[in-house]
Amino acid sequence: MVLTAMILVRSAARPAQTGDGAGDASEQGRIWVTLEIEHRLNEYLPGWERRKDPSVASSEDLLWYYFSGDVRIGLDDAVISSSVGSVPALHFAGSTLEACRRLVAGQAYEYAFTEVDEVIFFERSDDGSVTISSTLDSVLIAVGYGAFVDSVKAFVLSEVAMLTHRHPGLGAHVIVQKLLHEVQSINELG
Image (cartoon, rainbow, N blue to C red; front, side, top):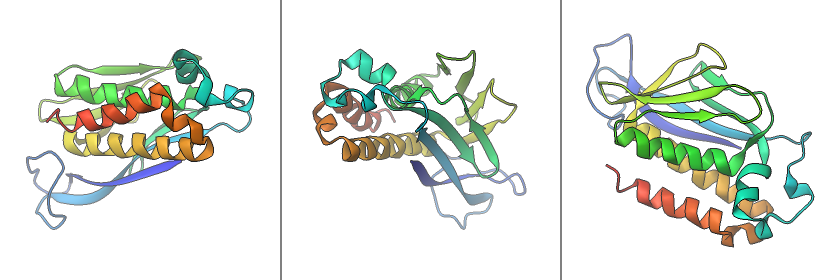
């Protein structure tokens, strides 16, 4: 599932403007770009959803053993992408929300892969932008904090919608309800 959210970031070709990534696309120093956060389900490495109804799974099992795949975070030509095939969708979705909470508090956040020794780093720069990097490659992505939060919220809602469409009973699961509540609470972070 691909999530695409339109955001504004600073253009290297023009004088930098301050702000969090919101505003009019015609403003001097800003251009429209696309930040994608994606989780692709791995059809070859079956998660437990192929053996057991996810709506009756324990919370721990649902977070760690269901809906395995890869993640991709991209901004224009800059892309951070895993190829392990075992990143659990709902755990990654919750982790991106945790990254938002930590970043607003001035703390960095690291998403560590469990199957391989790789990490995605989320950090807030002095200018308020969010930088995303990883041990997967040397790519560095920078976006405004507001744009990052908007992209995370849209990604989580889109991922939940796709999974609950495939598994209708999943919408009532405590983990899914918690993710939806957390998306709403991110609005209050500022």
